[in-house]
Amino acid sequence: MSNPIKILLAEDEPSLGQIIKESLETRNFEVLLCENGEEAYKTYKAEKPLLLVLDIMMPKKDGFTLAKEIRVEDSEIPIIFLTAKSQTEDVVAGFNLGGNDYLKKPFSMEELIVRINALLKRGKNDINNGPIHLGNFIFDLKKQTLQFNSHIETLTHREAHLLFHLVKNKNQTLERSFILKKLWGDDDFFNARSMDVFITKLRKKLKEDPSIQIINIRGYGYKLIY
Image (cartoon, rainbow, N blue to C red; front, side, top):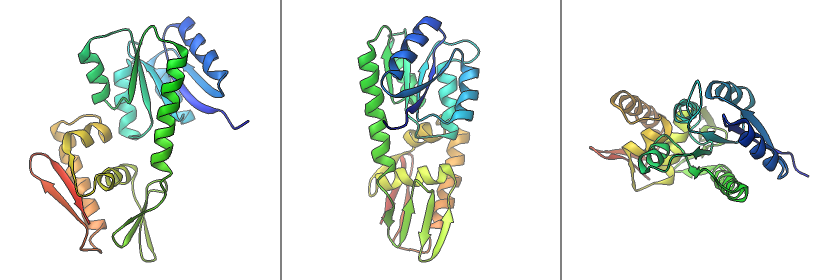
């Protein structure tokens, strides 16, 4: 049997948390159960799980706040929100904060497992695409490197994932608000200025190949052309 897949579960109802934990563990998942947002954040930092299942209403730190903080550090880890709320604005808020999916309580364990497996598969396909030929560069998201001839430059986590989304949407406009919410957690003014700085850094790193351009589509976003 393969090694268990590590999942962080943040759920403040002890009985429900234990039921979910035991059910997932029968499916070869290792479940790190936390009963509040602060404990969940510390566990995330220490254990580096592959997926997060977060209850929205939790003591000390709610699921939305927790997700926003984690998204600053990791733009790709899959997040599923558990909610007792059914209001559309709560669902929208969850997705805007970087959530990948949500389940309304009560839910079946089979449905949760199906959604977990779908997100893990999607993430694996993204990261395992291997090195990407970007003009005369070789870009490797997994290693966070950008190679030009024999020179290899290490990118920061945010630089690598920003470039990855530009490459995924090459010759198409990457919407500014989408990437800000995905990588920065919010599309406010200060994050927008930060993103402009990162775009400038990427342009400098790619300047050795003049066929590659990152164009500013004023008021909307950026487009990578090559």
